[in-house]
Length: 456
Image: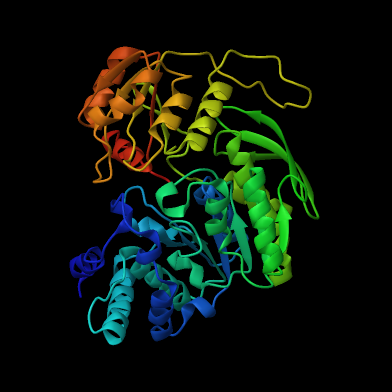
């Protein structure tokens, strides 16, 4: 196969990321993935993994860990989803995405294995096939560590064929309730499914029921569990439009005045999780280096997460897609774009810029909590420009309006993001701020329309 044939082959598999409704328990089968990987030489059993699940922050946490490990000199793989501009972003080693040449050879190997075990395409999904490609590619390149972010849930996710050195559970909130369950406990059960027998796990600050589920699952698996809030603590020192600063009080180390370039108080939690993982890794031959941790955190880029773009306006891009994410987006905005305040004791810099008029552009996927998102974002803007991302899962603006109109005083409908931006520029003039949010798909559209150079 050449490159285009490889792409067509990948796209021939069902892509659940583009579907809003399907039977979760029937769609995902780990034994199917296991069989494929066994045919490929079992790369999932021959590498060192860090496995990350959760609702909020798993991408940022993955990026933080990846940056620290690659800056320590380790050959480090990273597998994430979804992508922003190209699915090559999902598979990378250190600073490089998988190349066209490597993609072709890897897909060829996977295709042969698929045909051997199923006499055709079988029932594999795009994510399962691409996960197999990632694991095979990391094995071929002999990475020292591979960091895997789950696609959906954890228990049945295609990445859950690995036995990781550390399992990481980021903050859990309501998402995909038609698939993972309608309670925090049921969602946490799916996420905690990545914690394996006699393993080590680390969990973020959690709601009480999620914490209870993770603790019980760890106990049953005889896993050592470290928790942020008890075993690991932190103190926020300041948030601005340039950096976030905090102190870290960990398992074995105390680090003061840590600076990260990802913005918002919620990113502290993700960075704290990453440091916690690095404190555990000496058990597996990776020395802990404060300088490397600081450098890795500071150099982490993760586009589309409270990303401030300076064009003819100040534009904020954020992929918040549920109420919890929207809450932290609101908090980040309020912390950064508020009148200057006298800092509390210990804060190294003033937080808050002068308030400016804000125009909210919102586009949400069909299976998301529209009312929860609107409830949070209406607290920073009473005018909403409703549009849709370029994906089959996008909610039509007129339907979005019916679900969100009670939260806003003024609603404008736009068929696409380009039109929405024209409306937003008219509302804010040059001194204003435009906030584009509701979905990473919409953020991806914005990066293209605004011609922003993306740096990972």
